[in-house]
Image (cartoon, rainbow, N blue to C red):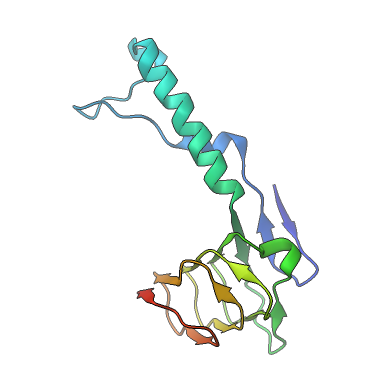
Length: 148
């Protein structure tokens, strides 16, 4: 369920059913599930995949805001420290990451006219921008890999 934080971003918590969105595929592309008589090892593999997806979702903060504003939004240490941050479907916002914060990675997806003030440290030194336009990122710490 998505919740709005104090800064106005919509934060999405991991959904248990999100793991079910991903299926385990066999060698010929046939879904390995009980309805097709999957072997017990395939069901165990699917459960393992679900656990991996849930662990990954717990390490990630998803932010979204479509209310264009001149006032910058500051991401707090409490909500983002040590996690990967994914800014999705945002339009016309300015987002600030303060010094003293350490995030794993930063992803900007399906967004328009977003400005990011990256005063924090990127642990993996990785920034990815996809399906977006008008993105401006100002990094105060070194960023080794930018994928756009």
